[in-house]
Length: 304
Image (cartoon, rainbow, N blue to C red):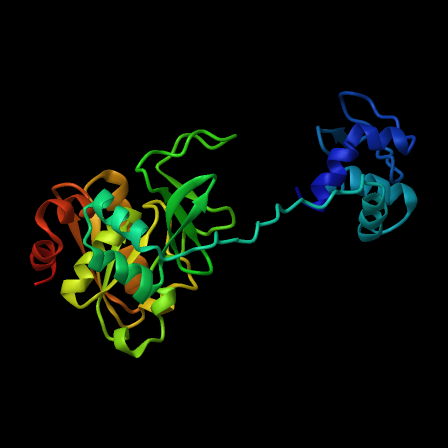
């Protein structure tokens, strides 16, 4: 609501007339209270008095100005000072992202390899070469955790079970660490600037399990794996320059939300000067395909 509207809400026409000691009839024409009017020429409406002789309109602000013998501008200033003080809108503070202490544990890596059907090559590539995977404790559970080291961290349980309901958070497969921004892709930030991968095409997938499957494929394929951890998230504007001038293949989940998300990312990346195409995963998600057919075969099917 703008200032003029606030004043008129605080001082409707009839309230202002009463304040200024002006009495007018509820209906019919009457003489103007602001000039010598021998032939009654005014009528009252909901928000103003209309003087049919002069063509003037008198809303509550103009009534106050005429009564006080001041300009409309001065009337607005005085009436604005009478308005209740506005409380500034409270902007909720964004909690800083505190990434759990991560470790590389060969036993945990082997357990994750068996849990997701991913080779140790893929697990180790993500954990030690890219630095996007680690192991730690979240909410009292042993977890594997994906992070870009700065903007986002997401955990999944090592036993493959869901996180239980906690407060307003329902049962869920993954737990996003407070302070994370899911608009940041996993796998890009840690590798940015490394000459060894600066010319490699990027394979962009959806979700944590598909990301480590893409890392397994990268062991065979010569590309940089990356992931968005939710199909409903757009790529952060500050992350788009990492894709500038690169070839990007998006492997989309074959459902409504997955296809919609992939199309949105494709649109963003093309505007960011990336050569981008989208392919659908028709027989399950990427992790399912790699677990069933092996990373090398899936890589050959999509990239060669």
